[in-house]
Length: 438
Image: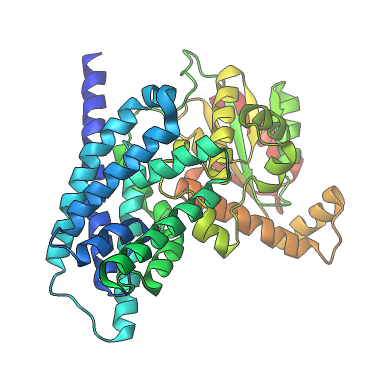
């Protein structure tokens, strides 16, 4: 018990350390964006405009602005919500203070930086957005709390029951409009809000998406060594043996999984997961079927609609919520009884689980095309394009949520080339491994 308590304290210390570093990096990003003289980020637009016309610093105004946001949250939550979210509300005060101090420090550190050429201003703006995105990534990975702007958007989304992306757009636009009105009232002209404000609002999210998976090593460092991945499902005293099958499209994953489950007399989950996740999440089966195991490719969606600034289990984006729901269902099923689970990043979700065998199946385009034509009824002309598209989507989805390379043999206990080894042979080999080692 004492050793477990020490491990917990050590992990908590690491998380707060990373969170503190993230606040400093966020402040540096804000400073670089502001020093580009092309405007500032939407969240700091009102404080920045106010600081241009008074001797009060940007950091101080940012802190006062955060207090206003917390006041808005109180109105959004109501009495009952305030009691339920009391700790989240209280944590915002010290976070706001530290971030305001770091913001002033960042502005002081960059005081001598004032690019003249327009292209240098753009470069400064983009670098600032990259730095800001890095700070957001570390804040999310630390998973101890969030900054007030993100809480405000989340509480508004929950209160009005609207799409997160729409609420975020309204929030950012409102801040920019308020900044413009404030500037006009104080100086009679628009200052502090320019094209850089819009650019920062649009490109920071995609940068977060690019950077986040590449910081998987930080997440691994934060996890307690030897402890299975966090789960809402209590760890069982005995772990039923489980097989996860990751596969390229057309490599026979469904057929092998189903045949193996039948041979072993255990439960098989593939499309069945869609129904189970629908009951767990509230999403329709049609939505899950169309959106699982792939990331949205629309650039505008990446820029605006995704909830990049919240930890995965608190995110209000549909894609994140779907992944969290699938993860919860997969952990629950693995805790209940022996089974075979196909796809859905199950190898990663159950990566630290004892008595679990992770398999990856692949094949050449010729054999996969033949199987797709015969099994799924896709025409010979469309099959190669469909295979390439599905595999690309699975690869991007896997990397986004795991930070690992899909199909890398180091992530699995065994890989099989089903172009060379028949489905029957793979099934028999897995049956022997399962009976002997799992």
